Each structure stands twice: as C-alpha cells, then as structure tokens.
Image (cartoon, one colour):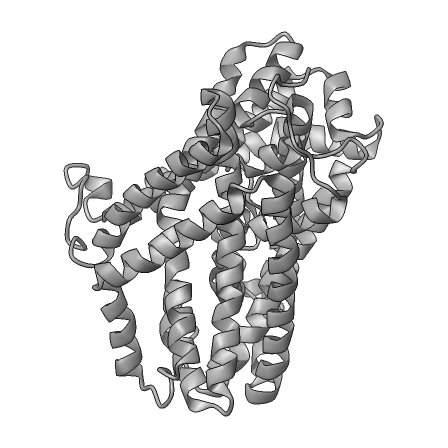
Length: 458
C-alpha cells in the first residue's frame, strides 16, 4: 500500500524521537505551561494535565503515527491510502488536508514569534538588559512590536533557516538538525535550572509549581489541561502523520509516543524551575504568556550577577524550542506540496516558505501599525480581533479541534481492527483496547465540547 513516491526513512529511532520531541517542545511549553500550572493548583494541575495527555494526547499521537506508517505518504495521501485499503471513502483525505491548512496558518504567525526570540537573544548578549527597569523593559517590547522592519528581518531569518534545513531532506535535514538542536536545548535548560536555583528563590518556585492545591481545581481547570495537553503534544498539525510515514516497521509506536509525551511534559516543568525562581526572587508578577518571558525576565537578568550571559543562554533555549517546532511543521507541509503537486523538494520548500513569509507580513503589521484594524468587525464575537488574533484563534479553536475529532472518529469507528493493530504495531491486548475505547467514546465528545465552548466564549 506504499505511495508511488520513493519515501525516506529515519536513520534511527533516536533520530525520530529527537525530531518528534523537538516539534512538540515549542514556545508554549516554555512560556505558557509554567504559568498555567501555577495559576491552576500547582501539582494538582500537573496530575490532571498528565491524565489528559495520556487519555487524549497519547491515543491521538499513536493514531497519527500509525496512519502515517500505514499510508507512507504525505498527510492527505496517508489518509486516502488507509481509507481506501479499509474500503472507506477517499474523501477522508480531506482531514489530512485540513491538518496541512492548520500548519500553514500556525507557521505564518509562529515564525514571527520565533523571530522575537532571536531579537531578544541579541539584546541579551549585547548587554541591553543591564540595569533595566520595568518602564524601559515594557518600552523595549512595545518598540519591537511597533518596528515592522525589525520584525520582518527576524521573520525572514527564521524562514531562511527553515529552507536551509528542510531542503536537505529527512535524514540530512530534519533529523540532523534535531540531533544538534535537542542536546543544546537540554543543556541550556539544565544550566538555567542550576543558575535559577542559585540566583533565585527556588523554594517559592517549588511551592508555586509543585504544592497541590485542589481548591483551585474547577471544571475550567480540566478544560485548560485538555487544551494544554492537546496543543503541547502537537497532534492535528500534520507533522506526526508525516513523521510516522518515515518510521521503520521495527520502531514501537506506543513506546515512542509515551517517551514523546513524557519528554514534552518534563521540558515544560523544567522551564518552570528556570522562570519562577527568578520571578519570585525579584518580586515580579508571574503574569501570563509572552509578557512574562519578554518583559518580566529581562528585568531579572538585568539585575543579577551573570545576567548577561544567562539571559543569552535562556533566549538561546527559546530559539531552539521555536526553531525545532518550525522545522517539524515545515517538513509536513513540504511533504504534502511535493507529493500532491509532484514538484521537486527544493521548489516545494520555496512555495511553502514563500506563502508563510507573505502571510507573516500581515501578522507583523497587526502587532503594530494595524493593531486597531479588526478585519471581522462585523462579527460581534470577533469584533476586536486583529489579524494575528484571528489566525491564532482559527488554528487553535477551529482547525486543530475539528481535525483531531475527525481523526478519532475515522480511526476509532471506520478502520477494521486488523488494520489498527497493524498500524499500532501491537497485539490485541490492553493497549489496543484502551486506545480504541478512547478514540471511540472519549475523545470525540470531549473535543466537540471544547470546540463549542471555544466558540461560545468568544
């Protein structure tokens, strides 16, 4: 059932795992996860998050890798191959196409955000954080948002790096990059944890992150945990299907998926032990999202011994997390362009990167000069959303949830047991029963509820 196009494979299980973990570990792990943990009951949230990651993230991740390995094609082609072999409609290929559209949308703004990490790395290493106060730090960030040429420069740098790596193929490009980038990420995060333990208030951070406070756990907490688990693992974005299509038969998909989820969560928790000791040491507010990383932390680095060096190490960590996610997404999109349109890889990467580079310009403008331009102002729920807000909302609340719900229905209900067992690479035992139960009865209703809530809350 192989696709006609000759298909590369990972050279080793380690290479695949590093690439997959690299894709999963993104900016969201390092700036969003620690804050969400602290706000939602510390380790009580971590326990709920892990349950969600293994209840929803694991079956979906295993399914996407299995569809890829069974189909041996780009995401749409793999869906078509599995559907056809199972005597189902080839129209299910549309779910793979939906995932590709999601990658296009996400990378059009994610490459812009990745550019911020390069900019701040340069500022850290040249000593711009030294003696910073809150007003200047805010001004620095606002200044960057209002400087479209500077943002465009870094956005272009990120896209050029994607071209350089992806055009070299799977083994020489993505896999080799992962083997270089992931040890750098791990080294940087370990160095930063040690530094934060010495220079910061480690006790307060440990209490904030690890003390279970079940009084803060509400139904909303569970929804946040589902959302975080879902986005963090990186399902419904075509990449894991593509990575699965390069996976040799000898590699265990369930075992690999467990390693990916545990590594992803581990990095996110370690990031908390990097950020919060510094935040508490300097009496800073553990405020949400980008502000914490790009406005609050530079204050801490500017006031502490060795801040210039360790600020640079920290933003290098962010660069690696951002870049490894960009590469995974780009590989999925390029495999689709190559195999759908039958164009050489070198040209396919230029088509893809050119498209996200152009859409990225709209994101850049919406951060500054167009920040009061609301394209869908006629829709009450979206009346105050900028281009960037709309792209992010559309990807997270519509494309990802719809794609994952359709995947679980497709594989859970429409694919024969024999094919599922072959795809997972397991016997008819506990794991298959568990994954099948989740795909059929748990994941679709949970994701439909999340989709409805996302639309209602807007």
